[in-house]
Amino acid sequence: MAKERKIFVCQSCGATSGKWAGQCEACNEWNSIVEEKDISHPTGLGKGSSNRNKGHIISLNDLEGEDAPPPRLISNIGEFDRACGGGLVPGSAILIGGDPGIGKSTILLQAVGKLASNNIKTVYISGEESISQVRMRAKRLGLHKSPVRLGAETNLRDILTTLDKEAGLQVVVIDSIQTMYADTVDSAPGTVTQVRTCAQELIRYAKRKNVCIFLVGHVTKDGQIAGPRVLEHMVDTVLYFEGDRGHQFRILRAVKNRFGGTDEIGVFEMSDLGLQEVPNPSALFIGNRSGDISGSAIFAGMEGSRPMLVEIQALVAPSSLGQPRRAVVGWDNGRLAMIIAVLDARCGLGLGAYDIYLNVAGGLRITEPAADIAVAAALISSLSDRPIPEETILFGEISLSGEIRPVSQAGARLKESAKLGFIQAYLPANIKHKGKDMKFNELDQISKLVDLIAQDAL
Image (cartoon, rainbow, N blue to C red):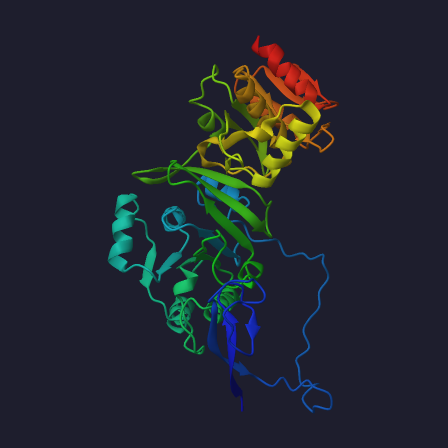
């Protein structure tokens, strides 16, 4: 007979302990430990056990096989399919997270509506809204005639029983995993144990029935998906919906994908009719830019396999404080501190005494070091009040010694820039495959960037 005992589980990181504490020792979160029941089932595999040889022998296979992979399911929403790696893989589990109101339920309802219109059988299970509320949103999006099957339930046993009886099912949406509960677990919905158990059973169903399943996940105040971290390891794909409510743009970013590239993004624009895909985000992010304003630089970046141009804005102002302000939106704060230190030490600009504000236009978040030159150029331009020429793009990594290092996929960056009408580039030296459509200013030291901005502005 199973032995029941009490355990204490951190609702932030999933760590367990034998007694309650005010602070979790694993993640240092306060008041996150909750008492739960744990049932330990004897395995019978210990030393001297008579049951240790009672297991079933599994079949082992070679890596090479004759079975052709099933075709991907295409939603015909290009940006959504791109973020998913080119379409949905049957039998895969996809976790999508994002801030409240960012558009997770909207994009999934649009996706399953398109899939259902292409004769792909889909089921949408909502644990947060009633059937009538989902229908209201579908009508606003113009999807009320799509043959999507709707359900409103939170009991995992009832959901799996219903799905098992749906013949030919191909796509399932669970909105959201934190509202589901398994009646075999004695804890409240949303707790670490419930989330882990429900996700495990749903993923097992997806693999067994070869059904693609979406799990909507809530996020914490730090922007991480709520629940145990193991949840992201269990699924095949993790998508984050990013965006600032002050902007109409939304970014669907793949941070994990077993069937495609990571860091692929899909760009959407929020409108009255839902999320509209943006097939050419570079033109949109730099479309309203004025070329005669200092502190603005165009960065030619890469998001997964897609080249993307984005505007980086900087404001350098005298500070009256003992410790000058540093405000960064869309870039790494620590990386900005490093660039400021290099400009002070190698070029003598004295930026440490100024308030500095840095912003990536459009609500996009940049993570690659190739943006170093664009950030440095925007800072230099704002400090000297000399605008960078409008038709200029920049990319390259800055080292602590002030050297400019080459970055990957320079050819794709330059090709995208030339297509959008840019005629000049500041880039690292010794870059191959530059083409002949642009003027290239090769840099090997950060001091040359200061001289070029002063020269081009005259």
